[in-house]
Image (tube, rainbow, N blue to C red; front, top):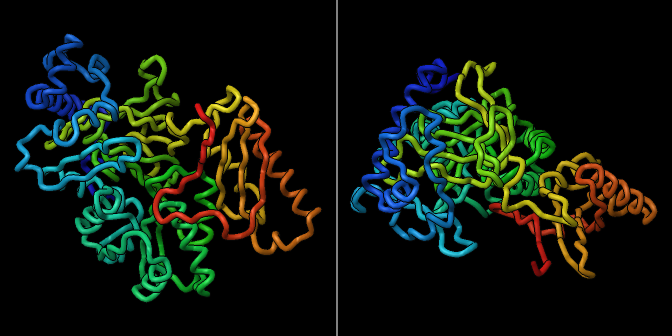
Length: 432
């Protein structure tokens, strides 16, 4: 099932023509209406008319989160403030938040791209979607909501929290689609078990996961717990929100809505653009956004792109699942470590709950990595000798995955903090 076959299955050459026209339009608009971009383009000696082909995008300066923070609150808007009908912000956990402004036309585009993605999951107007993403200033809840309503599905805008009530509603209302972060999905499944609600008691046929990185092993765990296929949703506040890329039934990468968002992969050190299939940092340009066009935004998300026609029939380029962020990467004794690598190792173990926390310290001028892992109730009641064997096995798995020796601490079931939003996986206690 395809929502917009004309665009989603467009011939590659036709799509490139559309992208070039839209790129030229957005660069001209940004130059003429956003003082920040006029200044940056002038400094780089670039004029809008210099963009003659898609490769010319590389002449344009990159935009960072710090640039957007410096323009707080409304300095990046390309239209008068009265034309902005909605604003969202990032969390602002590292200073001033970034602000995202939308015109009526932008909301339509957001609805369209999310409708395409939800259709990939099998959503129709007959579905009941339980949306546990936060509403408020977070873009997650609203993006899903707009797309679902555009399709004509019934939305339960429950947002985060009220976990036992979530289970009750899922059962009583006959929820068919669950939208959730992976960490909260695990918690929901855990509570459902406590409430005696089994997989057969729910009516789910698809689960959409977003807002966090997750491994293929985590997907399998969640699919098993909910007895439904799980699909990846990608987005970020600065560009639009969820809907930039979503996964089709093939579950082997996310289709980028590249008629609206132009993707590139760069080397984070040299800033050189990388080729098809090469892994690096994702950079995105909004091609159609009215209220707040963004040129070559550095997402800090690590992935790769692959072009070609998918088995699902779509020709939109695919990005691999995000494997890490340049700012989430831990440097431990000179080795680059991503939390997703540790998660992958943990989920190979039986009897281990997929709840963990990584603690980094530097006690004697040398980095130490501790991984706290919850055991299952059955395992925790076993003999000490048995637990020591499991601890060593986990340490071996992690060592094979990251190339470093770590200290694993097995903790009692349900003692690590649960998340109703994005899980905090890393606590870095080093004074860097």
